[in-house]
Length: 228
Image (cartoon, rainbow, N blue to C red; front, side):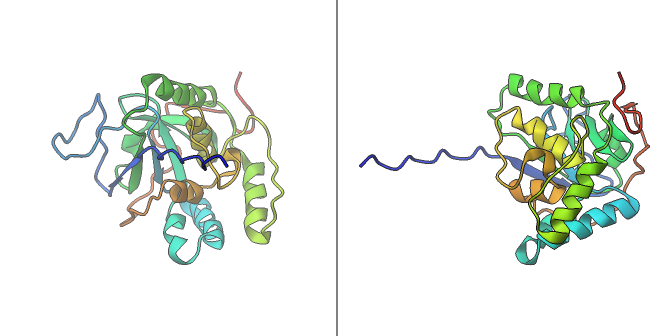
């Protein structure tokens, strides 16, 4: 009998929390040298909070799936990915996929999940190129309806519209480009708590003030359709 295959070690993703009035440093903005925390580079991503009633509903739905010891993962309701070395991020919000700077989250908490140190520049580029390709996609409201039905009923039936994005799925699909495999669900159907569970993000604290989704937007989609 052939010996069982030896599983490969999972790459080490580093997680660092930033509370209100803290900001992660980047190669172009090393604002707090000597802290021991790594710089945020293209392909790294954040878990943070969306605002208002929408963020509240997301966390409520996540709590239906993540209970007991896993409740900590339902703390997060939003995700975004770094796309350059100056702190620009791409994220999917209610108005569509948009670009702005990590500085808009200075007053709230977030966790940066850093890709493994051995991640090549080409792999990071692949993740960023996919995020850039999705930049003008509309928000995936039908996907949200599908996720809500699954959370409420436990059903496994999923539906959505191609070319539309939700925040956590956008990040997951970018990370697929560097070879990350998600066992929780299809990447296009992942919620922020799924990302938190997958990467074991348990660093939580004072949420702070969540920014409005229109603050600091430098590029975005038109509501309801992809801009050509």
